Image (cartoon, rainbow, N blue to C red; front, side, top):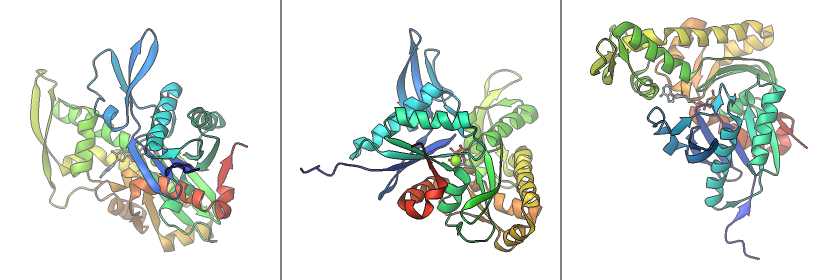
Amino acid sequence: MALGGLFSTDMAIDLGTANTLVYVKGKGVILNEPSVVAYHVKDGQKKVLAVGEDAKLMLGRTPGSIQAIRPMREGVIADFDVAEAMIKEFINKVHRRGFLSKPRIIVCVPHGATPVEKRAIRDSVLKAGASRAGLIAEPIAAAIGAGMPITDPTGNMVVDIGGGTTEVAVLSLGDIVYASSVRVGGDRMDDAIVSYLRRQHNLLIGESTAERIKTTIGTARMPDDGRGQSMQIRGRDLLNGVPKETEINQAQVAEALAEPVQQICEAVMTALEATPPDLAADIVDRGVMLTGGGALLGELDLALREQTGLAISVADESLNCVAMGTGKALEYEKQLRHVIEFDN
Ligand SMILES: Nc1ncnc2c1ncn2[C@@H]1O[C@H](COP(=O)(O)OP(=O)(O)OP(=O)(O)O)[C@@H](O)[C@H]1O
Ligand SMILES: [Mg+2]
């Protein structure tokens, strides 16, 4: 029977705090959308209005009857029903592009996720239509996606800086030797910019404006000329309550971001100190790989190098590394079977 190009195949999902990516076996990453859901509450029931890109546009702009939320916090599910609806809708979008159900689905989970949190992720994927659910540790996926030789008998350090968390891991022989997760990532950087402007300039801005400042002129280091580039921003003047437009420069953003940047540096140093000496020596030789969206913060690699003395590289396509790595684990399942935990 002709299937008209439709087939059932396996998928890998990077269910991130900020973005969800879906990788289809043999095809690559075919969906990449913000992890945001907008819904209407009527008679106590949540009715989903939009997910992904469309829902993100509504964040911070909804009337009382509509809520736009991010169901993932710090890499794990914070709102189970909403997360499940989101996963279902993303899987449906993939199916509408010609991929039939019921796929086996592998999802990555933060190294520090509890058994209950892992169960929640598994259950929501199964309820969303998977035939089997597999889990893979996020740092392993990040390292595979960044092209690191994780199965070699050498120490490799990967630092995945996402929206919710920064995960630092040392890998050797295909497994985790040391891993830790700190609750500092892109969201914390956005918050730091919001509070800096409130404190120093009596200006109230929204989270999406803070994110735009970070991705446009954000930097982890004081600019050499003491000012750097600047941009115009708008917010509310807290002294008289009216909208105000002002200019912000890179020196101010660097000052605002100093604390989260410092916390990321400390996480790297702590990991290095906790790593057995031979593996630590490998890392000193080979350097550290940064993945995740936070790795794109201006001059973060330089700031980390200055503070840790280690060579730092930013992975190509750092935002896609975890999804690519989870996908590769599917493609090379025979070789990488030990890193995937299936439910049955
Ligand atoms: N150019 C940039 N400079 C600084 N930050 C950036 C840049 N581009 C994206 N980001 C930030 O990266 C974060 C998203 O990264 P990523 O998609 O890796 O997170 P995630 O996987 O959803 O989160 P987590 O892994 O914590 O669950 C957001 O906070 C976003 O603002
Ligand atoms: Mg991530």
